[in-house]
View: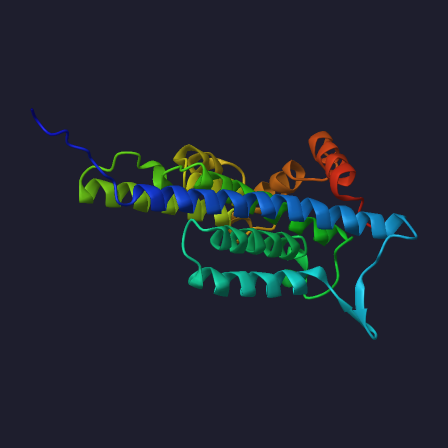
Length: 243
């Protein structure tokens, strides 16, 4: 009678634990972003809703709480044993902190309170990009489209090409396509060949006046699709302040 041979993957459980923690972090990120954005809208329109936290004349933005929570959760995460309830709790804490922080992403960039201004829309764009990136990681998508890497030389060529296309997307202002392209290269190719954003480094340095004018028309807020996009964002996240 032959003994049964059982193949054991020593990294299988660890991989599942990491996937579960990443999923909880992503879920907490999305839920906390929606919750804090809803709270901000309520405090703007409902008199009795608790407003911003203040210390004297200082407005303590919720990104402060988010940064502190990310720091605390990240530090505790190093001490947590993977797969335990404590490790999952730190993942949730990090996701909540990231959601609070990304909701005020535009304030990092402008170093002033532009939350309800046109520039504040960058927070929404940044959150969409971060969510897309995290979702691809949680889904187990292989970076650079390398589901079955071949030779070292071939892999290096593919990685270099994908990184180059993604970098081209970034300098063209096509950030979302660039991020998605790091996992699904066709998105990077699409972004690399399409028209650049008029304010992007690529457009400013390489476009002729005629080409730049075409880009400005293409990305104008007056276009039908742009107006509908802004209306959708207004409905979901609150309207910007009008001069």
